[in-house]
Picture 1 (tube, one colour):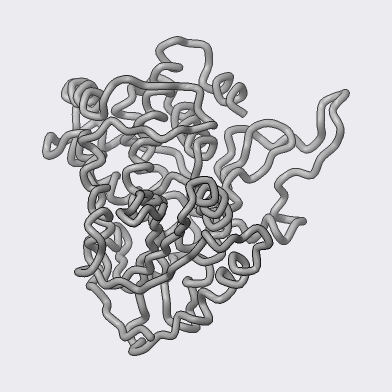
Picture 2 (cartoon, one colour):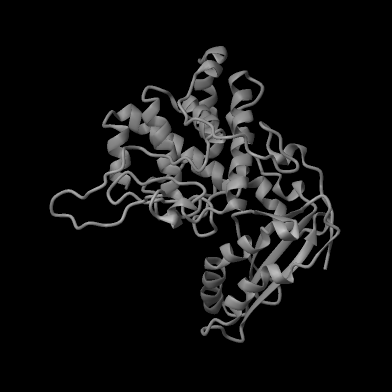
Amino acid sequence: VSQYLLAIVGTNPTRLENFRLTLRIVKEWARVHGLYSNVLGFLGGVNWAILVCWVCKENPNAKPSMLLNLFFRTFANWSWPHPVLLAKQQLHPIKGVSSHPIWDPVNNFRDAKHLMPIITPCYPSMNSSYNVGEPQLRRIQDELRRATKISHDVCFGRKTWSDLFKGNDFFRQHANYLQVDIISTQEDDFREWFGLCEARMRILIAGLENPSFGTQAYPFAKFFTRKEEDGKHVSSFFVALRFAEDTEKVDLGPLIMDYLQIVNSWDGRKETMDLAINIVSQKNLPSFAFEVECSEKENEVDDDSTSSETSTNTNEEVASSLDDETSNVDASKATKTVQKSPPRSAKKKLEPGHDSGTPSMFISPLKRAKIS
């Protein structure tokens, strides 16, 4: 897939560098805001690369600052599940290549259920983001809208690109959080136990998204791993919970039961492995949860097996170069740029706390409900 993406961008050195820089910034933005993890049902390196490539393909002469602006504006307003396609799907393989099924929402009911199809450009074309669920898509859209607002303000000099990397206020947006602690007394056992629990975490997130119980899940794609004073290895994962207006009491037991049954019945589980799931109110969140807000001050980039590029510059240096570039762009022209996008379907029903153009994080009240 990487070779196809580079071929689509072209051989022009400037365009390649613009693509790589824009992709690097988008991926770091996604990490800071808890959106980077394919295994947790968000988007991974290939997914983000395809989206950035789409914008570069449509705007081959745009500089990184403009590409970023167009990226956030385009996908904040994208009419999902309309697919992102870099090229027309190839229905049949070339000579010498065996035939394989391709992504086909018309004839395959499973493909038709995909929420955020981002289609690979090579044969056989597949949906690279089939893992994305309703909670993850909602968070991605919210953060894209927020980033769109920031990039708009950058064009008019009200903010700088470094604001993209400023700590996320996820842990200040909601009243209630589900804290999942993956625990082991042995380091080797911890790695094995963590791998299983992480791989099944999408089941927990999907269970917490339950209209009949009046619950909505807002997962944050980051694990807070540490070694505690008693020698235990612990990794914590958080899912924010919101409730319907008429909800007064919620029993979360049935919603997390599928996940618990799967991890508790694992044949490889040892006595050194444990799991704790607790409801935590905003005021009682552990202090380490807020360390993510300082991530823009650190030059800490996670390993990414899907990326071949490495970086030694800090986020501040990259943001500074973008600011210099943006200062040479006429803001009025930048905001008038029309980006091609698919036609909008019927107006979507807005959920509580949303309006048509503002992320829920800015206007949603802290909805409190009794939880058993």
